[in-house]
Image 1: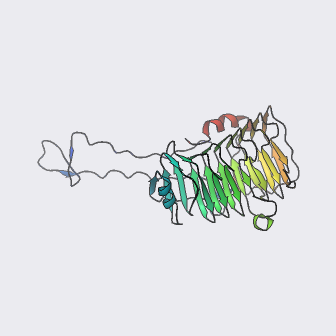
Image 2: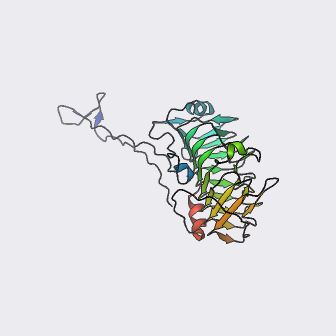
Image 3: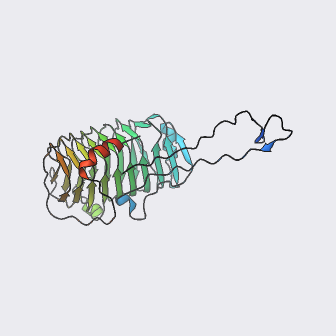
Length: 326
């Protein structure tokens, strides 16, 4: 599954002609100037395409074709993310920040090459239609990305180092979320779906999340740990050197685990975790290298969307080459 990157249009110099203030080009030897042709406009930045749950419920388009704004500091980023008007924001450089930053609805937030948020995370709370892509996160003081009471969210092609709590947590009735093509590198409690066992009244019937083509690289646990969401779809992910466990289905959850590649992962998936009751889990078409076979049981609701499943044996090469920030 190849990723299509956005391209910018670069307008070159005008050669020997001199550019007049009127926009005309004066060519030596001619008595008059002809207006210069208009330069072609740069194509709009196109957001990542959602596959899975984020493509349902009308789809997830973020800021769409809104004119992009570039930010390079915490104050600029905070101001740019405010409000629910359509917006496309590009982060440049390493932005150091010390708190959670709120993200408004109808937002595409992406990183330029090498862009990083250090010391803080994003609050995607009580909003809808948000895309976060091509950013690096490190040393966050709470969660790197906290999705809460929000719908239609796509987290795509980001790289996560380590921080205080979850890299990407989906909680409190959030729904229609896809987490795709990310590189999770070394975090302990990595990615949670459903924050507590006693939140059934808000979470039951929601928390539908797709995880696909992510690289869980030495992440110790919660890859993901799921409560209530049914079905949560975990497909075509790469798990390498996972310490405690890969996927846990708990507390009324139903998780479909298919077409994944598990390497050096003793416990790839199981039912129940900690004090949480067992959920259900169906596993099929997975590939195991020096890994356990996992625990499954019960049935899971049908996945309603179309998707293409890459062969599990090819996932290591596909995902290691394509996951994370570019």
